[in-house]
Image 1 (cartoon, rainbow, N blue to C red):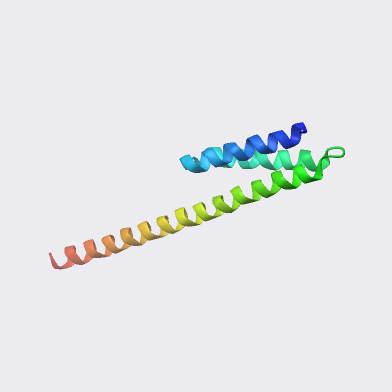
Image 2 (cartoon, rainbow, N blue to C red):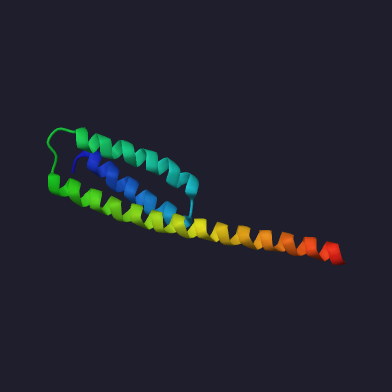
Length: 98
């Protein structure tokens, strides 16, 4: 396995671990590293296309999981902000009539 393909695999595994821990800072750093790894793999001299395809498909699955997780986190934040807004409105009403 070429060095670039090995780096893609290591980065994918690190992304999976960071996602499991919900470590968004690490995910951001690993995303940049992942982009570099893919660029390196695509610019390398002849590579094992089947291995490259398998690694990229695995990486795609991780990014799908990341997208699902971030959408869930975003929705949780929206829900929490809605609750804060409702609480603020209730507090205003309480102060008006209290």
